Image (cartoon, rainbow, N blue to C red; front, side, top):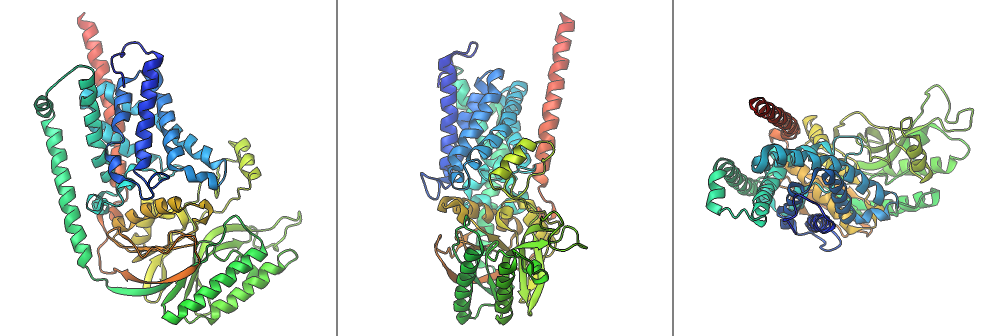
Length: 552
C-alpha cells in the first residue's frame, strides 16, 4: 500500500486502499468456517483488522464512509455466501445492511483517530465493542460475523465470556490490532520510531493490556480444567431425531412424509430407553392446538394428520418436544374463517412439550428473523414490505415470555433457530430458572454445512456465558451437545436422517454467572464510553482551538 500520498488523493492511492480493505475482509472471512476452510483459521482474526485500521487512519474524510460500506458489503458477501441458497434477495439484503452499519462505524473510528491521534487505539477497540453490540440490538440485528466468534476453537481465550460476554473477547482481539496499525502506518510513512520509544510512550496502556491478557489466559486454563473435572448434578438421556426435511417443500404430502420419518426414528430410539425425545424447529407443521379446535373446508387433511400425531404422542412412554407452527384466532369470538374468506388466525413459531397425554407447555419464539419472519415497517416502507411479500416471505407473531419447561425432573428452555446467537436471550432463560438449554433449529434451508457450522459455533458461546449445557436438536445440522466450557461434541452427520441418544449433563447447583446477572453490561459501558469520549475529545479540541485563536 502506498502511504506517501497523504495530502492529495489520486486513483492509485484509492485503489491501494480499496485493495487493502478487500484483503482485510478476505482474511477476516477466512478466519471463520467458509468456502476456503471448513472450520476456519481463527487465528487470522487476530491480524485481519490491521489493514482496515491503517486505511481509516490514512484516508480522507470524504472517503471513510464509502469505505465502511464497501468493507461491510464485501466481508458479508464472502462470509455469508451461502445465503444465496436461502433467497436471491438475502445475499443482497444482508451485505447492504451490514455495509450500512459500517458506513457509520468507520467515521466513528476516524473521528477517534483525528481527536486522539496515536493514542486513539484504546478508544478504537472500545468503539468496535459498541458497534458489535449495537449492530445486533436493532430490528435487523444479525450477530453472524462478529469477530469474537472466530475464536470458537480456542477454549482458553474465550472462557471470560462467563464474565464479560463476547464483549471482553472482542476488546482483547481488537486492541492490539488498532495499536499495531497506528505505529505500522507511522513506520511506512517514514516516522521510524524505535520499538523502545513506542513502548515507553505507551507503557501504561500496554502494561494494562498485558496484565489483562495474562489474566484471560490464566482464567481460561483454570476454567477449562475445572469444567473438565466437574460432575453434573444429574443427567438426562435425550433422543434427538434428525429427519433432514427439505425446508422449501410444503403441503400435506410433505407434512405426512416428514411425520412418518419422525415417527419411524422415534420408535427406533425408544429401544435405547431415552428420557425424552426431541424433534427440530417446525418438525411437525400443522398447528396442533388449532387443528384440535377447528375442522373446516380446506383444512381437513391437516386436521386428520394432527389427530394422527396426537394419537402417536399419547402412545409414547416418554415426553416429546417438537417445533410447531402454533396458530390461534385473531378474533377469539369468531370462527376459523372470516366473512371475507380469510383465515381468522395468527401464527407463532413455537415449541410444544407433549407429556402425560396432552400439551403441558409451549414456548413462542421471541426474537424473529428480520425480513423473513418479521418486518415491522409496513407503513413506513410499504414498497419493501410488498416486495418481501411478493417473494414468498410470511410473518410470524412474536412471543413475549422466556418460558422454562419442566420434564423428567429437569428445567430447560428452548431458544428457536437463531435465538441461540443472542447472548441476552439465553441469559434471560437461565435467569428465569433454566438449567439446560435445548435449541430447536432448522438449518436445512441453507443447503450448506458451513452455514450450520457457523451457527453452532456461535451457539457454543451461549454455554460459556451461562455455564449450562446446550442440546441442539436440528432438522439436518448441526445436531450436537455443547458443554458448559463451549466444546461441541457428538456431532450427528449433517443432511442425513437418523437419531442419536445424548447423555446430557444438567448443572442445577451452579450459581448464575456474572454475565447472567449483568447481561451485556460491558457492551453497554462500551457504548456510553465511546460516545462520551468522542464528545468530550471534540469539545476539548474546539476549546483549545478557540484559545489559540484568541491568543493570536
